[in-house]
Length: 258
Length: 267
Image 1 (cartoon, rainbow over the protein chains, first blue to last red):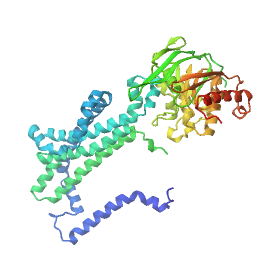
Image 2: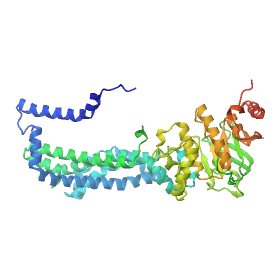
Image 3: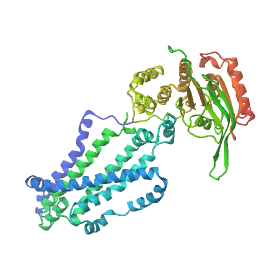
Image 4: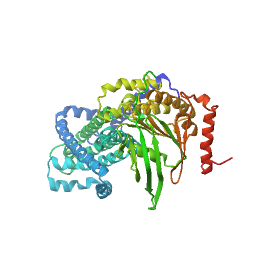
């Protein structure tokens, strides 16, 4: 039984996390001058915020590049991952041949391929998108396969007894039952796609937030570096929220009731 | 109960049907051994037997979900090759789709059979009202109790207006009081609809209470040991049934079979 909470507790609860974040930022703001750190070593949150305003066009134009790479990689991962999962689920030979390899490859850190991808694909968008795709692909495949397997056999018998075709079984029950797991994979994948794109930019790039960070490092511009970090984080939060938005519209979770 | 008894029942004829499964060791396990059974249109037949007697296998074959190893099943004279469009199934587990409302769950078979949904929504509400679920159509399954969920599952089978209603231990997972209520509800609905029912159960009392005929099966291999007609006028009442001489005699006969087969220990 949950304990009864007072009105004040309930009113303050949603403010707990933002409040803690604000507290940390204030401590940071105060600690930097207190320890006599220069902006080059550690800029204050206020300085970073100021820089985000003054250099907003620069951050935005590079942010668009990274955002595009992430979205393109994620879209490719869905376009490739969901059909792969369907093939694994519906074709036993395909499952036997491909699934063990996919699980084995899952353990390979895809990031180590970044320099090779640059070698083969050049300095443009291609290797970043490919890395974002590669890193996002596996969780989508695996969560989709797991989702398709969640349906109880009794459910299949039920719709078969009504005369359902294989396609109807898929659209009416198997896919809806798989959606919670599929979206779980999407959420992991979108966060990983951001990592893939930025790592790709670290290796070799002419644009993008990862590139901007390297430029800032070369010029000992720590504030711009931090501003880029904030920008990447914003992209991550934005995309994760977008996936959650679609999840809320499309997925009814068993636990969500009551 | 306003609806008149419509002649919608389908006749079933089972001739020499056997079902063998291959075990993991590669041996054949005979689940059903040459079953002969005829069910007249509009008849309520209950099959009672211990687990492993193949009664659920028999139902799955009638539902067109599995094939007999040998023998034939005919529905209204036509050999059965797959799920029959006139058959509706209720399983022990309600299998409601948790992402759909009660109404959309009831309408699922209509959707699958690609009939116009609009024509059936009112009928669905009517069926729900008959089982005491008026006003529940917009609820989600997780908001319902186990008994309510099984009632929805029964409505989902009935909306297809099945000439043959197949029920596989439909009340097996319910508590005693809910079960009693649903047995009464089923009798009421069946009296209104008049379709053919095959009701699988391991409950001797509910089998005798509901059925025109009780088929007693014994396991390994599944065989019919007794085919017992129940002549108790309807509507029957659960409260009085345990004092009814015909009921008690039927129950004694079924128990004697189970005792003879070692399914029930003799006192």
